[in-house]
Length: 161
Image 1 (cartoon, rainbow, N blue to C red):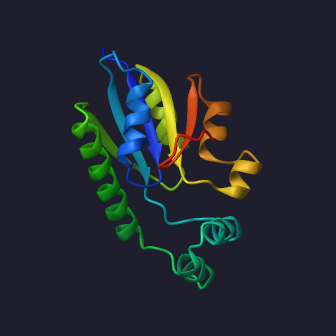
Image 2: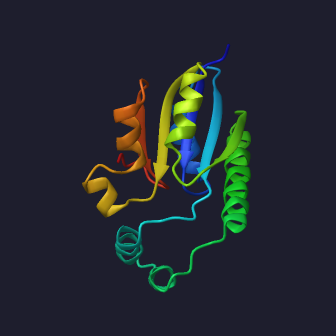
C-alpha cells in the first residue's frame, strides 16, 4: 500500500505549492489526495478582516452584504479547484486524486486518516489573521485532533503557517 499525503487547500494549488509539497519527499513514490471544502459558511468578521488585509475590498463588501455562494456553486468551485490542483500534480509527474468536503474539512481528514495509509497532512491556505493568531485554523485543529504530522504552508509562498 502506497503512503498518502493529504493536501487540504482552500483554492487551486499554485505550481510553487505543488513543488513545495512534492519536494518534501522527492525520492519517494507517494499518493496525493487533494481535499477542498465546498465553502458556504465563512465566519463573517474574520473573513472580512482577512479580505481587507489582502486588499480584496470587493470580496469584503460582498461578504459584508451577505453574498454567500449557493451550495451548488460552492461545490462546483471546489471541484474546479481540485481539477486544477490535480493537473498541477500531473505537470510534475505525480498522481493525485481529489475530494470535495463539507464546509468543515476536519471530519473528512479524520475519515481519511482512520482509513489508514496517511503519512501526513499538508494544509495550504492564504494567511488568515484571526484564525492563525488564535489557532482555530485548519492546520492547528488538525494538529490537535489527528495522529499524523501536519504542515501548514501559505499559498504561493514558502512561508510556514
